[in-house]
Length: 572
Image (cartoon, rainbow, N blue to C red):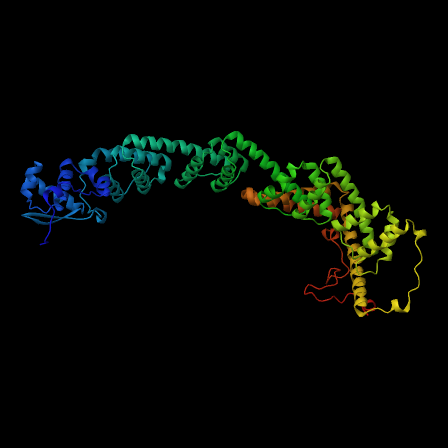
């Protein structure tokens, strides 16, 4: 025995700890006497006094037999262990370790419940197995939910599932409500009324999104999330109507966009979605004109389209500029850089944009003429800027072409042309007749280094292949121009380009329509081929016909080696 103990005064002020699981799980199903016996016995465990069962029964105003019977009930619940019945000696067990022994369930106790449940099952065309009925009755025995509340849940599940009704669904729903401390008929009725309301909301969203199934339990979490974010249901409907096809996950992405921008009402959402649709259309328009495939326009909208429209560029001006940029093989970033330079010059409205593009088209034609003379000239913005500068120096096209002829053998023709035209400008030479004759080269100037000779040979080779490529591409352009004179080809070709953009867009926004769009593309390709066949042409006629199939007139094979198609006499 310990050498120290609590005084009676000390123990009178101590506390008896009751585990919460006892209160939530066991107390509701126990009688008042059973609870009093359990709590008083628990209190005696912490007292160091001798206190026999007879004294306890007398104090609680019950008979010793009742006391033993009540502790037998708690033993069935695995909350105590009866070590001796005469005299009565009980050992208390922790509530959180109790698993609960199966207790015999009195059929008469749930006779009315069973009768009503069977009616519901019969109406739903369902028949539960005995073990399923046992699970439902065990739930009532071990949980504080009212039988009428559970019947309300089973009725809800029967209406929702019909012939697919299962005991598991009923019990899962009941356990969920118990976890939320909803035990009474009134509490469950209010909760299921919310479920019915939410089910109607989900059904409406499903109809807008083209989802052909009944709402599932996991679907309700989306509604809870959107409601907590403060987004109006009508705003969600507007998003779903915009998507037309999709899932709750795709709708959740749009809801996240709204939340990031603090848009919660229907009016704010519709205004944003209209703007979003306008920007997406601009991105797809520019992509189509540039010949660039765009799958998800959102990144392009945020990085480019928003700024373009804020600066005053509209659909028409962007379309005109993108058509011109296609000829320079621009991508989105290069096109954006072009718009930056135009904005700095005040070229924004449709009139100034068309004037700019018309000037650039003339410069581009002149550049193509320069390529035929000295082929190693690429179609770039900087090349066009040089031509614009030369024109501002009052040089005619013929003088610029004359400079190109004299620069044809140079390693960098444009640089040499710029130097030559600059000299002519300084000397006041603006016509071919005024060009001074070159002085005979001295012996000293005729002696050239090996590197200079090699550079000239490289320049000659590049010019040779550039001329070949220019001829092949010009052939394809002439063939396409001839084909586009045919209305059937022109309409099929335009529809095909649009369908390819629609296909890219559907991969993100409308996967369900991919099959239909692919079928449309197949049909349009067949229509275009028929139109070409009627014109005695093929699809290959629209592609450049390179003189060398191995290097495609580049001078280099796919593995990086020099091609052997370059004339031997010119290689030496």
